[in-house]
Amino acid sequence: MRFLHSPARFLLHYLAERPWSFLLLGMIVVAASAGSIGTQYAMKLLVDAMTMRSALNLVYASLALFIGLVVAESLLQRAAAFLLGHLTVKSGIQIRLDMFDYLTGHQMPFFQQQRAGSLGHRIGSLAGNFGALVHRLVMEVTPPIVAFVGALIIFFTIDARMAAVLGLIFLAVTAILVRHGLKGHVHHRAFAQKAGVVGGELVDLIGNIWVLKAFAARRRELDRLGGILEDEAKAQRKGWFFVERVRGLYDIAMAAMVAGTLIWAIGRWSAGAVTTGDVVVITTLTFRMLHGARDLAMALIDTSQQFSYLDETLEIVGVPHTLTDAPDAPALVPGAGTVRFEGVSFGYDKARPILHDLSFDVPAGQKVGIVGPSGAGKSSILQLVQRFYDAQAGRVLIDGQPAAGVTQESLNQAIAMVPQEVLLFHRSVMENIRFARPDASDADVQRAAEAAGCAEFIADLPQGYDSIVGERGTSLSGGQRQRIGIARAFLKDARIVLLDEATSALDTESELAVQAGLERLMVGRTVLAVAHRLSTIAEFDRVLVVERGRIVEDGAPQHLLMREDGEFRRLWTMQAQGLELDDKPQPRLRLIGGNAVMGLNDRVQAAWRRASGKG
Ligand SMILES: Nc1ncnc2c1ncn2[C@@H]1O[C@H](COP(=O)(O)OP(=O)(O)OP(=O)(O)O)[C@@H](O)[C@H]1O
Image 1: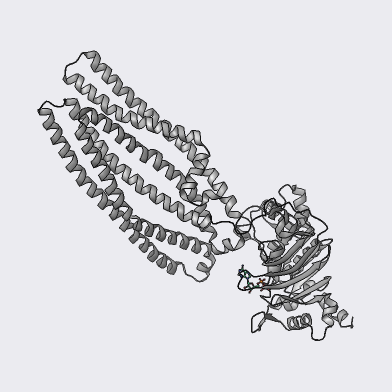
Image 2: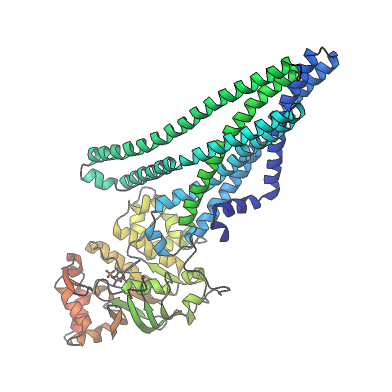
């Protein structure tokens, strides 16, 4: 999206979305400002008519003109404010929708590098920035410019020399103020940065409220927050003092200028060169011009500040997408559910490859367990199947179609994933499960929940399916969240199911419930499961053992177990002893949770016996 490349393009893009409305707004504002200058002129006519003892008709006509212009200006001002509010609210909705759409198109690493809260805040503030910019330009920059031009014209009718002098003064005052004001940017930026730190700290503290309470750290953290707020206040004070200094300077300059102009005008009046009305209009217009110079300078400073906020946000949110659909990419045509890796090499960082020349073929309906030491690249294989990343070499084919050649949306439709950590929205259980298929009926959702083994615990929740699960599902246990994840996969009803087994141990009862749900889910589907507890894949059709990004064994679990010095057998034996391997250059053994050992339950013991011919 080219319009995200610069604040000016961004502004123009959204102005061009409603060109006629914004043009109308500009015209109303120009007319209102002209009307306001016109009132000064009408006042001069009135004063002249009165002092020159003109016919009463002329006096009343001037008065009528004056009142008419005052009313017209005020009506136009209201119309402009109404239209501006209406337009910026509409554009604000559009901007946030566009930005959310663009933001969610970024690849996963983007979200790992940015804090979610700060991204949300930035999207929200983009709409605010746009509104503020349009407001400044239309309501604060345009009127002083129109007033300046109008005043200059009136001055020229009175005294050309004076008009030229005042015009130059106006430009000089504006330029000096803008120049000086821009120097204050450093203070404003420092304050904005400190305010950002405070915001981030607050979000962090509230997000980690559990730690705060558990470590009795409320008082301690309050003191720490006090220190950070003090820092912010210092930066804020510097900004204020700067602005006040600029204002002081301006006030002194204005007093001198108005006094000078008045003395000069009265001198001309006493010489009979100008009328009383002229003196009145000269005085009011001088005030107006000088105020206009100040307002214009402030508005320009503010506009440039808004531009830099906008620029800062666009630099983060508007970076180009790194993973996009190929032009004219077709949708994936779902088939029986085959997965094929052809010479796939991949690294999150190109310089540090994780998977090396991986090739395997999973026919439809096969259940494949992926095992290996921690960090071997198992989860990365699942990430590539879903095309969260592109491989640096080779291809991933889903139902014979390259994952990189079809639309990402259609690819994600064809695959159901039950991740290690099931993430839930702060919505009801019903909505959370239905997220997998928005058009599913309540009965469909309930059937999926029953199949996943959720029905019982959902019935025990205070409002059943309507219960809100708490932010990120915190009011549910780990096992319950996982079963909701399985229910989602049921509802999605995809031919290909990816499972990434949770590393954190569940209690035995939960584990059995999750296991039962998974087993029902796997029936008749192609399954790729990353397994930490080898017990879970004992009855799979096939096991791929991955070590440092390479497949070192591939076969049915029973067969692999029979290989005397096989890797799978070694992992199995270690797990039976409660140990697990880290896939580091110097592999390290570590103790794993007791449940993993308990996970080697009867079924596995039976498989072991079968494999070793003792069954
Ligand atoms: N998003 C990421 N960005 C950069 N490196 C990553 C990312 N995810 C994983 N890695 C690295 O890639 C390597 C393989 O990780 P992966 O998660 O695929 O291993 P795994 O075999 O699934 O491990 P585990 O069993 O511990 O889940 C690890 O060294 C890991 O640090």
